[in-house]
Image (tube, rainbow, N blue to C red):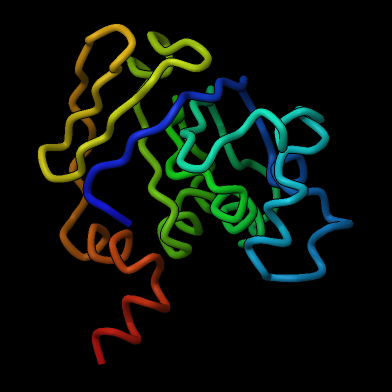
Length: 164
């Protein structure tokens, strides 16, 4: 992962659970690319056609509620989504996303002021998210150094493997 992410915002609502992110019937693999083929299929049947590599999910409150399966953040990564910005995350999804190397940002302000297909730029060095479409900038939470390293490594396993 780069320290600077750029992508279009794909907007969705509140309380999107892990079974909506990746239905259980497709969770018989841990291959992100395979999981990504079915990401959000029940929420937005056109998601696969709509998404572009590097897009950013901008979602409401309680994103990732439901089960503790790591398949949900893997499916999002496998679909080519570079980051998720939410009003709030379910705690276990948030932790799993970090472990899987999927950047996640809690920011109700960004969610409220971003519309579908706005262009966003997220800088993890300056901890600024810029809505390129509106020109507005937002401070984003600064993660501890170890979490930043996990994101840059592409996940906890990659980070630990490189650290040895």
